[in-house]
Length: 183
Image 1 (cartoon, rainbow, N blue to C red):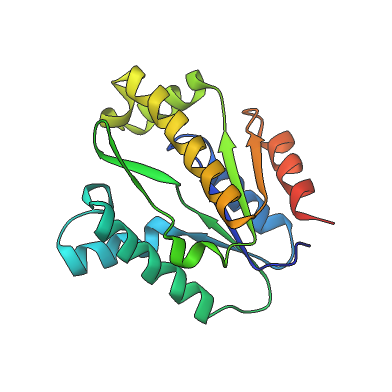
Image 2 (image 1 turned 135 degrees about the vertical axis):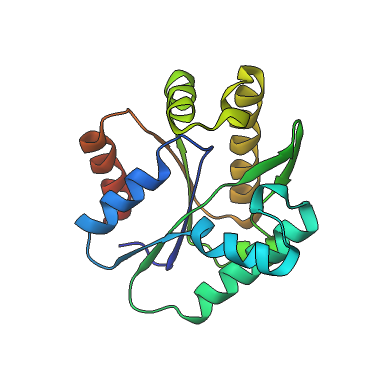
């Protein structure tokens, strides 16, 4: 297994992060799956009375820093697979970055999960995510901005970044992801 305990798994909504992370946490020992949204969403409402997708840059960093500090403090034996994003757009075309640099140095590996554009749009429409799925140009921009931020963090903090292609087949995609995590 990898040396550091925190793996930041990002990708745009619909890339398949949750499905793959759930699958890996069931198959691999010592993998602790954390859906960041499930923890951050109630905290955002408690603090600001708005949802995560409405946070500006400062509030987004505050919530994300709080979230990661909580994880770092409760670190147990295992690898934390954190399902999150590198960026988010509260207002098209403005994006906020989600990984505060104050915690970025504690991340052991960055993973960017990507899939083809058509699968992302199909999954978003299926889930009823109208804001994300109606504007195809926005979705293309979102994919680019997400990738650029993952690369920037990786370079700045000299932390490995693996861009993992979700082939749309859970078995082969989880095998590829699993191979990354095992020595």
